[in-house]
Image (cartoon, rainbow, N blue to C red; front, side):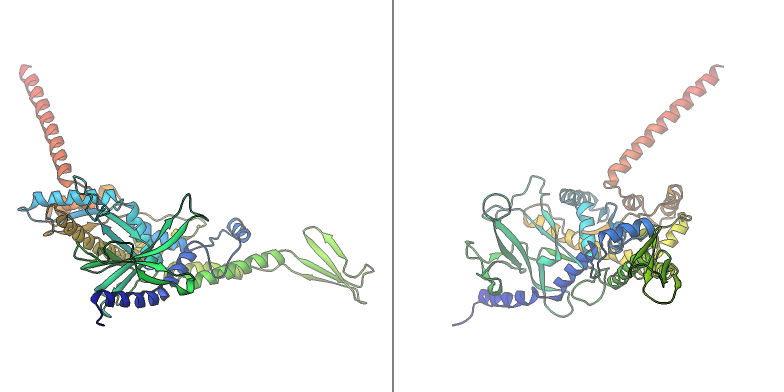
Length: 484
């Protein structure tokens, strides 16, 4: 009996998803997520953490600040969107830009989810975005009058399985997204049943699967027969999922920023445990005496230390001086420095410092240069992903019967996060405008101004009012002087 195309797809997917669910990348996601949340291979107890924090001024988990520092440096301020155009299409481009801002704002993608997807990318190595129109049970799009209610979700990489067409890892044959559905009454608990579902996007079709089986070792993905139509047509004409890969190379998936840090974190944890052990047992001078008439093993309590009597015919007194933990402290400081080096993160951002001057201005920018070099490629990765997303959003809008903005390209602008001299920055901007290097519109966008035309109109209005007031005052002063 000949195999239909749907059956071939079904067979291919089930064989492939079984292999993917055991993929090494899923284990890596869990591994690096655990280190971020202080679940380390070599653990330091809470009591030890507290003692280290108070006595030795150390930080236990450096993995979290490594991720948070580069995330905040890259995504702590809202992004600015620019629709590129010429004067001929300026009005339409402004409408397209306003629509994009509205979609981003609805989905909190200007700030909150922008930071969420960036943190996921640098922490686990990958992050995914999914865009879709909300629909009713019949698949009819439920668009608002403004048509700005396209949903954009930040997906955990553990539930996304792209199938690449070739080993250049550029194009997808299809992409599967799996999720859990909860059925039953009341809150999640004993009366609630969870089922795994999968949505498999091809450029021309969407397949729906459900995980079935009586035993976890016998679970299999099967086509969801509860749907009236399966597969259904992919009305978008493309796979509406964007991959943010934390690597600019030929790998299929990204690499976590914690990859070079976790071995050093384990070594640091071991050094901290050794420090506490040395501090506990070797802090005081210890005295051993022999030849006494006391019962063997009698302990003489002398202040914070003790005198230990050892049964022997010879009378002697032996002292053991307190241990020196300087070498262990030096090892800890060296490991902290190594973590800062391999993660390209200033040590001041990772640990508590013991004082000293704080750099500012140009010195501060030089100080943060390694972090800037680390963050720049990530901004490029995020910008390319969002430009791809914008292109898909324009296509989805046209497909739903909205205005056609597909002729436009977009640009993403990031704001700086380091303290700056505002006066000097404005002077530089004025020179760039006067020299013809940048337009006023571009400078405004770089400073995070959303509607540059409205802002410029307000500036011109206020400037006109000021000019009118100045002219009025000059006329009055002239009349007064003429009357005299």
